[in-house]
Length: 303
Image (cartoon, rainbow, N blue to C red; front, side, top):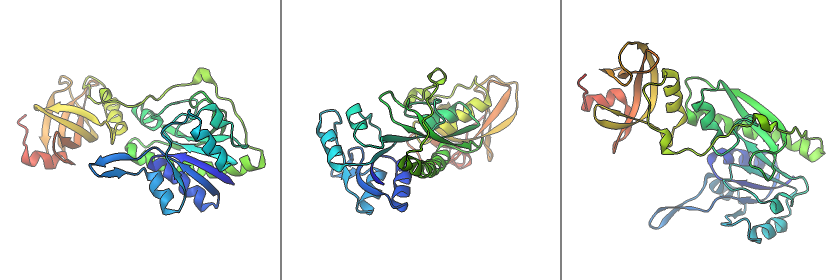
């Protein structure tokens, strides 16, 4: 199949790689413009890096609504457009170009978690299950008819990067399953129930500060779901930290936020449900990410 691919992060590169390996004709790759890194250097997106390694032609339009992108898409004559975490909303005139339509790999079980950060919000909310939806694209964000879904459990001990990588593979596999159905004209179209829609807005640093009056489980979900950015944060013994790993502690009647102990097991803090939480991996402001035990060797806390 002749496919125009649109995507940007490593999550999307996994799907592009699967399309190439399955022998599809990739007539072009759209990705976000390069980001400046240092004075004389720029950072390519993971999708661009992979595309160039395969000899694919990369396009990085800055505008999609001035007509130039539309003419480019028409000239490439794709049968299908595949969009995976591109980071741009396609206008209707581009959606209407390919005869087989435009499909999106979205990392949630739609209509749950429409929006830009579905993986994070599934973990922040403590969901036991998530997945990927392959859907036809519509003008409304993430509201198109669903072709198929693939589910996967969320392990209570895994963090966001682990789930992100796993869902990227689940998404690539689901996309590979959907394409023959699209080619044959037998792909299902299941309308979403918009009354059940929930949203996964962009992350911000406002989500970072830990509220120790919350239950242990909620704080652990916050820590897991905000890696690698913006990260959960806490002030402990007068020092601000990013928190990366935690473990469930023991019952306590101390006031939430009280430092209970600090040593080889990490830093123990009282939480709001009568339990304590061990902080086992952290990063001090201006420092490096390390185990809490290693940090305490050089910076003991008197409790």
